[in-house]
Length: 377
Image 1: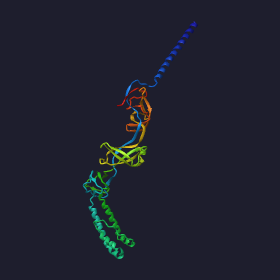
Image 2: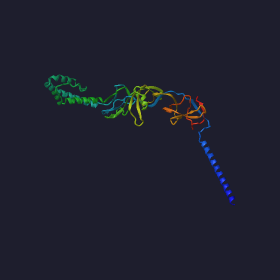
Image 3: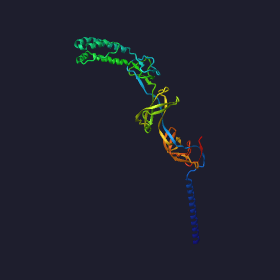
Image 4: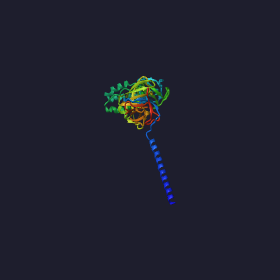
């Protein structure tokens, strides 16, 4: 009985051991299959991809900027006196020649006051002339001639010069000197009732109508020169090394479908703290140009040798690009160096000549993906 029980226990142990070995073998087989599946991804689906042959060349690099024109010479017109604006041609869009009367303010009241002041001054000189003739006979002729030149309706003549200290004290005591310089100040103020054009130009805007009362310090309008304009362009500090005062820049007006040549007139020495860019000012002239016109500027900054221009969206993380293998028509990543981004294009280096480049972004692309390259037409 004991021997029979021993044999049964042995058989059970052997069967159990064999089962454990079989289960271990099956588990090992499944793990091996998973490792095989984790190998390189190879796609057997074929996608048609339009390609071109890479041909590295020397590419001119340009900075593309844009902006609106501003007149090189412009001024805000303010009144320094009070009165009625009399000239009827003070309107936006009105052109004026250099020296032409730009704005006239009625000066009748002030002019009358000035004439009265000159007349009073003439009387003062007449009263003092007898004393000058007696006490300072050598100076009498000068003051007699000065009195003859005085005219209430004309500007004061030049005051006679003298080195006689006593005569100066006499003139000062009679308030002749103070009255003379007060009238001169009034004559200067009278000129402010008329504003002349400093250069040929146009009123771009007006803030008051003819016949309206003007108050001292009030803005009348804006006057701009018509034959010279300026465009402000913002460039990076790296690009600034390619620009200098006097450099020529190509400008284009989309509205007029016309090109212009501008010149770098000045470069700001201050960096914009927000954009970290520097302002460059370009001057340009042309009969079709107007203030506010939108222009595009192309600033040449250098040349990239052995470079290729590709669509920006075909780059992978900005440091690689897919190429199509000539042996098995699969996608392969190629490292590149980006020289510059220009709008939706990128100028890159590092692509060997003859490589096949996809013309557009390949959806769902991965390295090893099977494609059917098709040459672009």
